Image 1: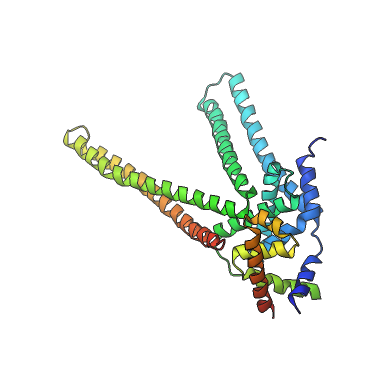
Image 2: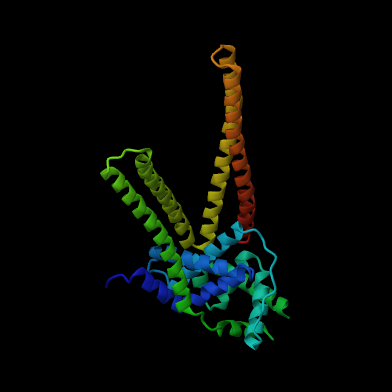
Length: 153
Length: 182
């Protein structure tokens, strides 16, 4: 079977996994910088696409690329004062805003971990993305979920 | 509200508009490649016209040199991007270690440059003094050359100082994130 063109694969990935990039941009950037980071993540994904090998799930690959770029982005950016966000008045959005605010207070690596967990990745998949052991991930997640619970109550 | 309801809200989030995302990405790439393509075509056409007219002006020589310069920049950028892509496709922990190594390497090379300057400044000073004492250079030439060398060294020192100012916080940041892996 011929290899699908790069653009077609890119579009298909964005259709299925585009939300991942939004979530990562929201977790790692302030509202003013979010669009910049999102653009950066899109470009990173486009650039990394030729290096994709089918042994990993596209979702795992996208997470790797996007989290690496987001972490890289935070180290080269000067810290900005976050501006207040304007949430839409729905119940789900309110909850999400609180959750994102709580996530933004976590250390960088914990943010990655909780994003992957919230998106329903298995321990094995999280281990593949982060390069940690499954045992380590289990222990960290238990601690993190506890911490989030405390932050949200 | 408990954490489970927050998790459910997260997972119910609607997907973004993929058509918009793809269109934006396409536009960004199209613009970049259009500019590079036009610049290359322009250079080649201008060089071709100049050669056909057999008018060997400085411009005739400058254009291929310019094209070579652009080519060198593109190759350099491509090599750098390859490295960046390799990092971006590694697992996060490995990519962080690679980034730290890269920053450490650059800091070392900055330090080496600084040491090199610290060694060569007194050497040049002695050299200029000797040339002047031997009557090979007059006062004005010594002054001009010293001024030029001072400018070059100060420029380099400023560049090293500025880059170190950028790299040191990055190294601290990376070390802090890597410490979270333990």
